[in-house]
Length: 404
Image (cartoon, rainbow, N blue to C red; front, side):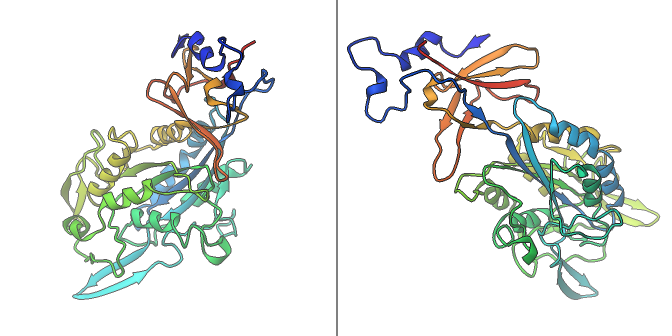
């Protein structure tokens, strides 16, 4: 067992033996005068999962492959590594607009029924229902989720996952009620947002209407890459996503994962051309079923995780390991919501690691930081680098120091 600082030093924060007064008596003190019988309460970890599915003409096999491996994804997501998991999932598509140059005539069209809107959950016969997202407690979650990720292949051939997410998580869509065509109610206060993009082509996102890049029928060129300087910079989208706040004004924790057009062996983004009997196509190197390079897709993933653990190739034969990895990250937050904590200096956080060893961490020792409740926000403990939460942790407990 490792203590961040000696318990005697921690107790010194709550006890004062000299003189007649104690810290309990000081003005504004939150230290209790007697020991508490009830330990602090750890709230369930809330996670809102947003899948962004490419529904262009080339994506039927990839959508089916995602649906096949959802049991493993959900099993991993539900694993208890110290906190109860409270999650929900919704799906949007990569279709926002199509700007097409056909024989010298540019035609711009919008996908108004998609464009960041949560897609309806199909019933068993494939008919749309009023449901726009699924709760983790739904007894039919798996079958509904499998139907929901199969978004078909009639969407835009100009994939814009970044712009679709921007529309989905910002007003007016994020606040307008579902009945009025919005996504209101999906994003919860105090919940983390995990975005999972699944696409076999480059991102071609712009906040401009009409879009500045117009596609042609020439499959030997990727105009979204060639004219990337006209698109909205990836960094601009990233800053917007990292700056999201919830309804209480608290910063929303956002994680990003991509199953996209990058190399199978090293996740590199590199344009190559492939000549077949059907014509010449642009692909990403080491990714034979892609239809474009993944420069922007890789850049976005790297901004969220420089180690690229959140990025994998859409050209894999199976997405099982990829989805399990995404789920393990999604369920492991570096902060926890806590109630019934009278003073953070009294808190000892005990983390049971994979091998059964226990690491004891504290606010006083600098291993955990504390943000008090305010404006409807619950108090939170944030794990520091000296005491990180790990994917394999078995248990988390918060204990209170007591003079007795």
